[in-house]
Length: 224
Image (tube, rainbow, N blue to C red):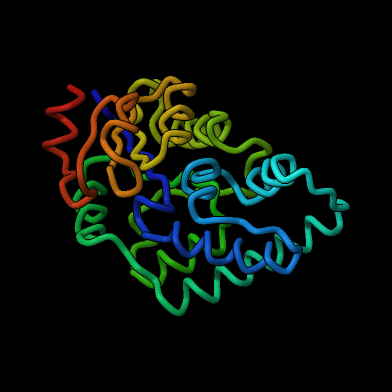
């Protein structure tokens, strides 16, 4: 039985992955690195900004100082926030889903996005109060598929729901890395096919086509 629900953010609540690519593409062009859209979607989706940049540097055999990398991360974050504020795209029905589920489960966010990005989007949608807490990129050292972010969320949930087990936590994810991280944390995972095709998400415990389909009855039916 599911007793708590943990949401990913990018690709689940906000259709922000194209904005992340645009921001990275802009910054990396300044560094003379041709970062393609296919490359982003196939290799780096759902990684934290720091992990993405470190992996991309290895792949492109590029050498930058820690200071240069931090400057690129800062520029990317600034560019992304500008894009997000210009065109925030929330998945259809997400606010109703959050309002509904919050009546049945404690809700949390565990995302590789930066805290200010998450807070701004939730505030814009007037959905901040649906969540008990947010775990963001600043709270962990390792990004997905490492399960650290979900273990941090679990510890916070246990303080609210004593006796809660990891297998009683449902993670809602849109990416392969996210599914792997949820399972590495010994949690159930419901995938939404916003970003990947169903066949790419088959490792999830269940798959829905769109977040608007999710409700308490469905959760009970799938994970009772």
